[in-house]
Length: 370
Image (cartoon, rainbow, N blue to C red; front, side):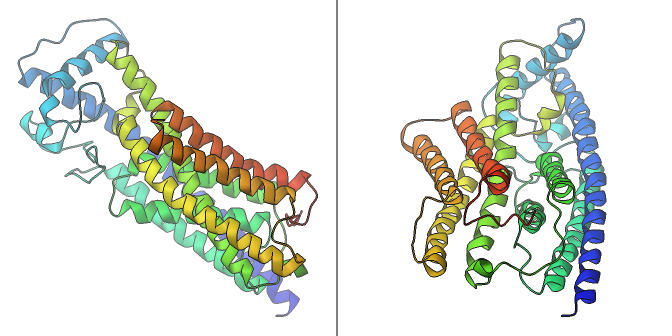
């Protein structure tokens, strides 16, 4: 393909990436608006539930009054909640109807993150914008591939932009069956950060691959690595939310003020942990194949399966951390905050491997393109 066409397609790709980032930004604002608006609606539902149960809400000053009202409401409508008292999950739509909230405003999924009857306009707008953004993003990835004449993950810029696309795409696919709209602010926010970092810190013009990457193993090895990294990004967001929700639940259960009203729209820490564990298990299988196929590719390219190259070592370190996470949670009872922190440490290792190792450690895997 002539150089002029390559350059033109590269420019189109950058334009699409910019438009995608802008669309994601608007979607991010809509998701944040949904969290703020729905948390207020849920607080009103709790107060109505307390009144319908004939419970007198203690009159207290300041934020403590809202916390006390919510605590009483949760106690009274526990039979309609998905879980025990203190999990701080939102009431089901049946509760909303019983207390006279005919619109069901603010109602979302139950503890299993299933969709319930609701009319959350900001959330619907946010999802629609995210779909539009991911379509524009896909156009950016495709034009980059056409411009370079290969798969678009030959350097850090391409790996990051493709990874951000997969993070949002996987989120939208899961959204079909599970109500993860509470995660939208964090997933879309991470995608924006990834696109900005790619454009500002890791931008690389369209070009050919170095000889070692000119292999069909690039498609197999790196595609699985990108997908696994995208899943790890989702579980990182869930684990971070799990820590916040766990702290909030303990505070409310102890009679403290609920200062994180938007977290009322987020499932319990236990629900987040369970889903994060399942996704991490899938991502770990992908990372195992990444490690295996990388070793096979290394034997084809350099005549050895393992050479203790920095990139190889850190890929193995990531595998060990997530293997330890899965083993500890499944057999050693590492649940709650300890499991969440271990999942976060694993993702930090992924980030370190992608950024610091690629840029500052010389080795056979120095393909940053910078």
